[in-house]
Image (tube, rainbow, N blue to C red; front, side):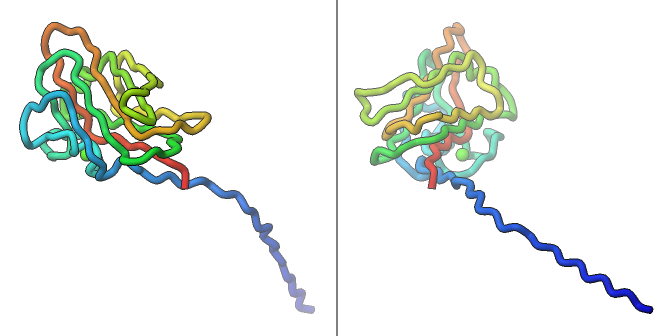
Length: 161
Ligand SMILES: [Ca+2]
């Protein structure tokens, strides 16, 4: 006698949702305190391309001054959840030390939200409560006597969508 077995698998539907993140810095106006070479302006950190090789032409690169800074204007206030920094990796990543990250709803109302003694290849700061942000400024406060160029390859400012 043939025995047929019918196996019914009932897959329970779940409704887990994960908030997507949108990078509101991409393409926004960026500036920095000095420039080493016109191939590497401030805008390269918001071009949407994560290429950590300087020769790839997608990183900014300041000149050799103390307290170099880079900042982006998001053009409006966003409720920011997360900020990501992508350091240069082909060489010289150790130049990114004593890094200060400040954010604020206006350029005169900035709050330091994180410091790093030494930036790794990738850093992610997640805010438990979203921050009201229009400007993001990153400063290199290294007090080395020389070799204080500042370069990053991408900065993402992420909001939940
Ligand atoms: Ca880039």
